[in-house]
Length: 78
Image (cartoon, rainbow, N blue to C red; front, side):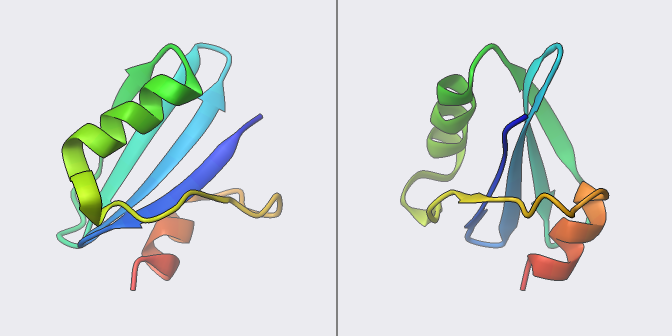
């Protein structure tokens, strides 16, 4: 399983690999989350770059102990 996160301007992003593919989750400061499905990790990253451009930070691994991605995003979006 691949789980990465990055920050972009006022948005926290997470990519999660599932059995169906890869999901790019966005968690803006306003609290309304969204997601998009992608065939590959590279496709997910390309979408994030397309949406957030040069405001996108670097990708880091979500700690293996994290079970709740929404809570993790809320706690780390500062």
